[in-house]
Image (cartoon, rainbow, N blue to C red; front, side, top):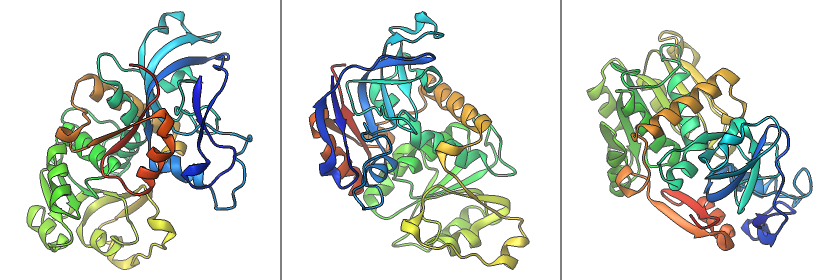
Length: 341
């Protein structure tokens, strides 16, 4: 099979497309013929490493956590009826060598989810962004543990960076659950994407006073904030968080330090919650997978320009270019087509 592999960490050029034997699924595993592989910031950050050029943990690595394809065969202990199922994959490369940037991958059976008739493009876009967004929308003290139609009725959510992949996912999940969703963006073009995703209100933070505009919409503050730049937006978040509200921080602002004033945040009992999808509590991870799968099956989760998430396709031979595109902040979702669909 063809696979994108790196033997040392570094810039995108360390990725090489090579021939490797098709792996055999072990006990509790499935072999998936990957149709589409999704690329996320976490993928290029793992590939880049700490800048030392050190080899990955086991000497080589196929990158990319997310993907979609068809189950080809199963290992012992797995129901053989799964063979032939169209599935989406989550966390394929987490503490494993077999990511989705290949014609085939092996993953534990619990990390594949039936895709039904939904597109492989959608399936390859669900994992990291939508599971992260689900956690961000459910981690607050006054927020529900699960998302479904009506779960967020009466609640207002602020999505900082509404044109990013996680921001787009949070808008879609929030609107599905009937929240009022406010999104911030940096341009008119990104505002159009946030509207397409379903945002109730969009604020261009370069041209408008974010705090003033939010207070017009919800004078008592928002219930939850999905935060991509906690250090940069700390003062805004402080001023617009409502009583018992939570700020869910899922990105690190390039290592900047987050400083918060204690007294002003004690009154509303505000919470800053950090979110890392890989290490979520097992129950929260299970809820996220189940709810995201339900949303996809219901047809309410979408990708493409009409969903505010433009798609950028690369062939497997150009996996390095796909990684570079994400590293250079491509707007939309970068996908690697790994085999015939």
